[in-house]
Length: 116
Image 1 (cartoon, one colour):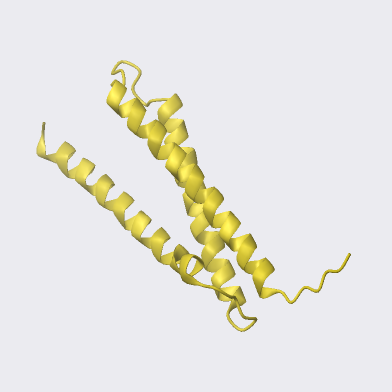
Image 2 (cartoon, one colour):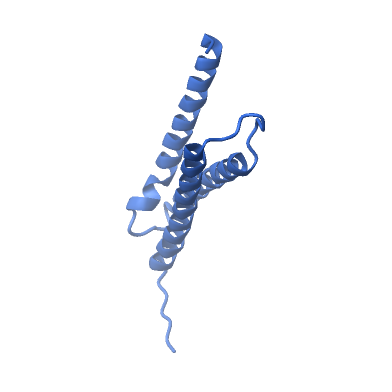
């Protein structure tokens, strides 16, 4: 394998790791917060929405790579298909978890007095 191809693959892997580190940094407050206060609500909301958006984009790219591989002459191995399937399921679960956490934090931070 030529050196240029190896460097390109290494650069792509580094870009994905950097993107995941950035996404984890964006979503970190959403995981550890118990309550959102009005003073910092916009900052956490924007961070969470950007992080969830990046996760949705990565999920779309993964599903696209799974169903429409770039080179049709080189078939994907069974290991690649299994890995991409599990990875997309984990991503979907993470998106649902983060959206649920965002909604639950919003509901808990509101002083709702609901009586029936």
